[in-house]
Image (cartoon, rainbow, N blue to C red; front, top):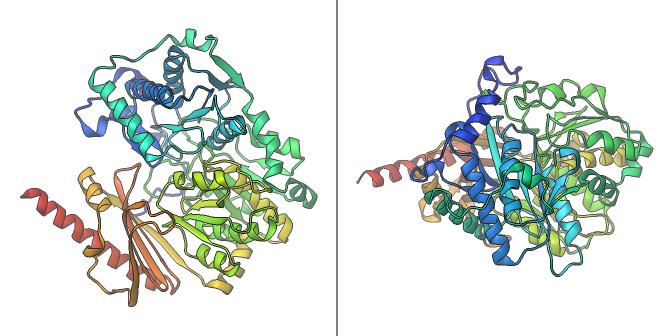
Length: 554
């Protein structure tokens, strides 16, 4: 991908979103349901868009929320709905709209005390905690967040009673109903004023922090972190967990410094990402320049994205760790330091996550469960104990409690971040040093991802790639061992293609949330070999898109 000259530099004033205009557009602009881009569309993580492009407006949120109410009624989900939001500018108006519709539909809603921002994993934790041991009256939730997307974006996710991202069948049902509401000019949507909704008997306040933070001791060794006196730094990146870290430090008496507690919907304190946009991505070395510059002040430092479902780990020894590097270290450590975990539970990973994790688990006699992109594929395994860990290359992960019971079924950036301190405390070395040891033992992979713009038609073509379109017998000089269109772990469709050789692989798929396609590649034979792998993968994608364009012209 082409890195812009502004990458890693402070955001100039000219790049900052005009928040008043953004919010005005949310209420004043109306999407055209006849335009595909302006319809409700659930990707891998909910509906996302911007009011500037009429892809995230009041109409969308009314239609989606009413559809969720209908889905709840259809499924007889009649417990409380845990509602949370992050710090993006569009989150407040979207929460306002959602509450107006939920109250009109007599849904019991749990709002945060003091209108506190609520991280995605905290909503998942609240749902699971409430539902534990219940057979009826189950809770579910809505998280209003576009995750690490730029400041002008909004996002809206539904989590059913299992606490994790909704399955494709669920989101497809909600999406269809929501678009029907748009097509009929919102006829049939129930709504009351915000003032009435706020004071409705069905609207309640919930202490999210008071439930989640004390429970962290059941998933992490907080005593070890405190006893070792690990000196930690954290940058919430202006996100939903901004007021969680101080409470965590206070409760567990940790040496934890919050280096930036600013909340600003323009996110002007960020450095620009690779493409010259502001993006709160804790895995990006460009977006993380502020914390990277402070690495020598702390034994370990970490950050989370805007809804705190992703983590970024900064070490003295190696700076910002690539997500794949840290996940491999975390898996090795956890499998050796969680005696209460079931021995037959597998390690979950998405098909574009490093194969170093496969080598780590194999070396310890454990199983890997490989699934398509999307954390939703780990939910059932985390709930029923078949999985003890689920992770993906985009720095999203969660794992079970010390006793093997489920913690969250959505990504949790807070827990992997604090785990880096536990690892440092228990091992006496930071995760960067441990990663170097791991690669000397199991191989040193080179990994990269290529992104390029893609139209909806091109994304559709890529999602339907098939093995017959791979004519080569070798990948960068190695015999091809497998051509996959479904994931080995659960047999679910990849929505693209993965080609595997002995020491290398690539996967090509359209993004579920952006107008781009992605090619992932990894080689255990070094960067030059990886470059060959990606070049051959790019050639396949280019031929596919060209053939599709010619077909479409006929």
